[in-house]
Length: 300
Image (cartoon, rainbow, N blue to C red; front, side, top):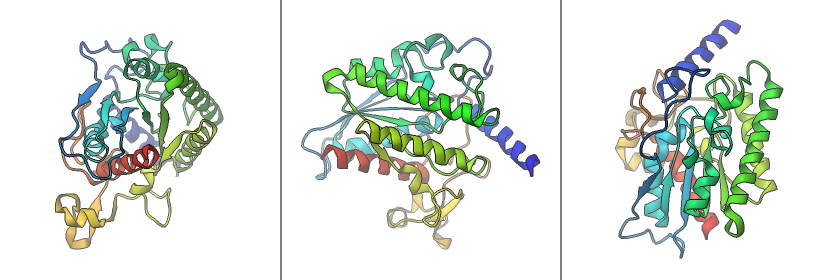
């Protein structure tokens, strides 16, 4: 049984690399920072949803390749439903330590886009963190600590980085400390217990700091088992009403993943250049709508 597991791990590495990890791989010089920040600013619609809170929230979205592919759709949902002032700065291949200040020389995220730096400059009401939990050696700041190499060491380091990130965001926010939204991840067919533990950590961190979780991963999981991976799910009422999102209407089911990518939710082929998903993808919309609903409930 170990042979298929190893193949799966190698496949995951290839998929993560295709979604924007540096082609040189870890252990070489970090990629140069882009000339223009990847932070994106988007306008609110002229006619906000009647469900929008009285005050438009400022939302900052950070994360890895999943956030990279989601960022455009999440911005559309937040602007339409909440009139949100939205900024996104995801970097593919990253994990929590990449967004820590003090790691710029060994990080995939430049100093200007560290979480604390963006909190100081943008003063968001919410910081949405979506991280799958980079389990393999794709980012230098993890010091080659991997899930397969040493599971307990991996979780210990991951939790320490998460708590440092909360501390840095809290300090940067000062009297206007933003509320952190931890996005719970969907099932992983290779390491299902890892995702369960990562999500448990996010839930504990939210409880410890009066923050919140958005169970976006639950929207791409079978209702019968939160941590069982599936490529297809029954179409929702929204997807049936919008046929582009119900990919197999004759079978009343929709695709969450491509045949060649079990991790990401964009139904377009992955590319070596990170970018938002260019096609309608049911999994991405489900995730974005759940994050938006969580923020709406918290913003009142």
